[in-house]
Amino acid sequence: MSKSKDQAQAPRMPQKLYERELYRLQAELVTMQEWIKAEGKRLVVIFEGRDAAGKGSTIKRLTEYLNPRVAQIVALPSPTERERHQWYFQRYVEHLPAGGEIRLFDRSWYNRAGVEKVMGFCTADQYRRFLHQAPIFERLLIEDGIMLRKYWFSVSDAEQERRFRSRLKDPMRQWKLSPMDLESMSKWEDYSRAKDEMLVHTDTTESPWFIVEADDKRRTRINMISHLLSTVPYAPVTRTPLKLPKRVDSGTYQRPPRELSQYVPDVAQELIDDQQSRK
Image (cartoon, rainbow, N blue to C red; front, top):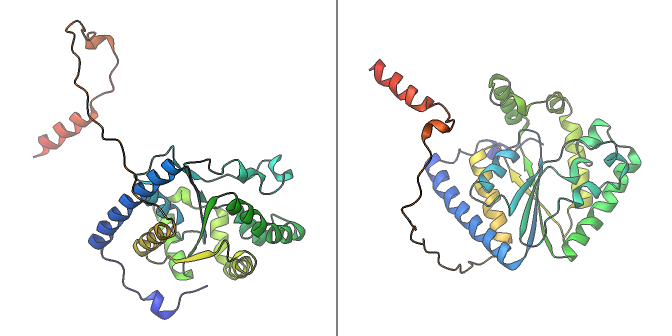
């Protein structure tokens, strides 16, 4: 679905303002994390949307200062042969959080409503069963105390194409592209219809979808993170003050000679010397 004229022409968020607000939000995320850990809460955040819509980069900023033992990213590969013959949601259940944990799903069980439906990787019966079972599955998670948040990243066709072309030229980001990603361009309307039908069946009062306008990545990150924080009733946790102990030096320890150990080469010094020699 392409953006409206006003949305497409919205000015990009200024860099300094973005960086200042992002850092403030990241500090709040740390506070939220500590509350979740202390209270034994469970948070699941689902990131879905078009290819190249900025899901991964948003997750990266969201987790930058979080404890990886508390906040873990779940990005599952294609299902194995065994997993293809399980109950569809089974492979995702084992990645759900325990008390005091956060799980961020970089794509989720909604693969069935998107790529599997459009690319013919599931049968019509499997697809219909998913649309019926997904709200039930999510209701069970919520009833058990899991805080579930679902975000759909919406990017215009023009901006998606621009990002694809940029990745094609960038050797550091070419790995982000696959033949299936490129094929999504020719199936734009098919994915749009699949998304619309998915929302009809799974955008419920208990577990709503939140749409994130994603043409400006700075706005995307700020808007998504600030919204997530606004939906979690966290509060600052009082931590026991820490004090560094005095180092005990008995005077008897002697470090082994350096030549007995293998050190990595000091490439940094070589670069410094080379730069100085060029001046």
